[in-house]
Amino acid sequence: MKTLITLATGVSLMTGMAMAGSLEDPVVEPVATTPVAVAPVMPSGDWTGPYAGLSFGKLDMEAGGVQDDGTVYGLFGGYDYDFGQFVAGAELEYQATDDFDLGGVDVNDVWRLKARGGYDAGPALLYATAGYAWADTGIGDAEGAVYGVGMDYKVTERFTVGAEYLRHDFNDIGSTNVDAEADTLSLRGALRF
Image 1 (tube, rainbow, N blue to C red):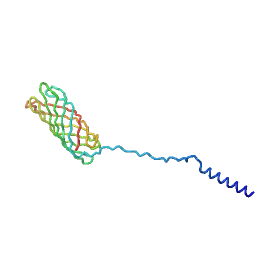
Image 2 (image 1 turned 135 degrees about the vertical axis):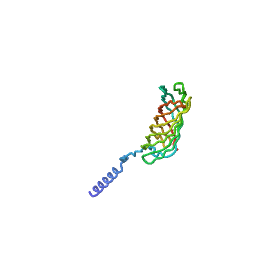
Image 3 (image 1 turned 30 degrees about the vertical axis):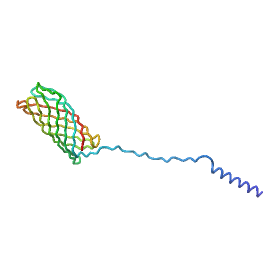
């Protein structure tokens, strides 16, 4: 009987060990992880430095009861300084016209020297501008005040796009005592250095 009990105990131990090392692979529970959100890299709001670019837009001019509009395109360059939330700068701009004729008088091009100041909204710059403009016409030069508003937006740290509206008050075109008013609306693209 002792032998039978010893034999039964041995068989039961061996069966238990055989069951412990079964042939099935253990199940491993996956560890829950939190996905890491990657924030997009936005251009900074530092507007300090020189810039240069191209413009394309529309000129609408009225003088002596005659009005006409046409296409303008040109170059501009300037320098801005960022004081935090306020940005100040200066700009020189040249725009040529595309066969612009005001009552039989050709308007060839416009030069502008402008100061600008505005609000630094991160990748956007909202600004007001004012200065002096010179226009070359078929009957002589005209000059006067120019003022307006605009916005630039940083697509990248070095490239901006924007729009600008300007109002011109030209006095005494070609010494004829004829004054002119002009509006331009231009799309602009610039490289910042």
